Image 1: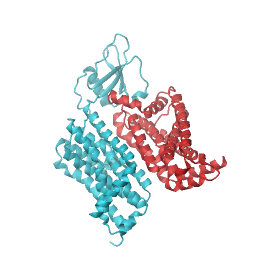
Image 2 (image 1 turned 90 degrees about the vertical axis):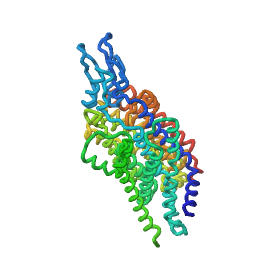
Image 3 (image 1 turned 135 degrees about the horizontal axis):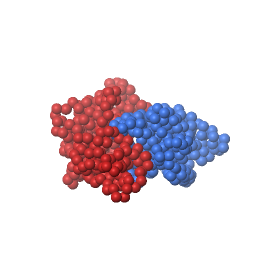
Image 4 (image 1 turned 30 degrees about the vertical axis):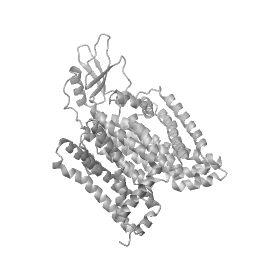
Length: 326
Length: 246
């Protein structure tokens, strides 16, 4: 127990020279959360369309909540379609039928035709929406994992500079030493949690209850800590471990559908994605939102067990390497 | 000149010998393009449009991340100490930061050109009617990025601070500039914010070049990036202090 507090205090003291960096990281995460709330809060426009009238007397179709129409006399460059600035260019011929030029799929074309004829048509069947809670957790995920990586610099430095040998030899508990790092990493997520509390108090829709958020964030952070610990254990240089870890985190988080869910079906990729703990985690968040969390308890168990396995493996390797007498 | 060249040669060799950096600029970039392109290909009728979008935006992301190559090349623990010896050699301090910037530039540019030239036929990506201009426009942007990395190194003298700060800034600007998903279609407020990000201007210039064959944004970006590079290298001269290495 004494080790826990000593290491914890030491961690915070070592953090002080890096406060600026921590602040930047935290601000980014907070911005991601607010961005997520904003995205879900505003009614999403389904199609941005440029209407090009052929003659001056022609009237453009109406804009609505789901359809945004810009009237331009000249066709914008092709690159605005590739960049998704606009989804389609629409021209009408004399007898009232529309000609649509788009890079998007036929499903979109059909939806757009429906909307052009009746701007208030119900098109909810064409797209899937995610709730506020899933969006917030998804946008936060990548940052939370990266923050865990950054915060474990204390352990990485200890290991690289050979302090770990001395700690293992000192009359201190190795288990409490690692535990202190975990507690410290978890405590660094407090600003995000406070923001959620504030948003909730201000009456915003944040999706989950605060207790649910605490559990989800703790599980997520533990996953990040275990992964960071594993990489730092296996790789000698903290720089390389950091770079590799951040790359894997970014890739796997995007693949797991943290920013947007994936519509494409591909058996090979689906198989790969299913293995990712973040994917199961996002699924669980979606189940939690729908209120069917109890039946899908396995979805949250998977990332937790995954994290535990990584953690246990790192501890065994570390003990073999440093605490030989055990 | 010969002195500078020998330092430069050593830096370049060090970069190519670093598996993480080589992997980051080749395998990771290809994976990002393929994965993002694949994930969003459902949005388009033809998957090649999705690959076209992400090949260009991810290339720019990779180019800007060249700043990290420079900081790694400059301040890696194994390299920092030899730098001290160069300061006291007749080569002088200019050789240190300029050769790091130049070596990182050559390294990144070579890998990125290789990347885009291999991916083009494979994914049916077009670089416009004048591909040489596309490759030419990459050069000053690439150099501006590595100068930024070198400049940050001169100011902060610590690799960790530099790379964390740089990767955050670059990622943030890229997210705002629409590298990972286009913000143009997410409401006027976000489209406005997106326009503030320099990454957006770069994206616009490269897309205009490869999709519209239009040169309107070529010279502004070319000259702007060159001026920024020169300014940052001059800034390195101001901030580089020998005492920091002791």
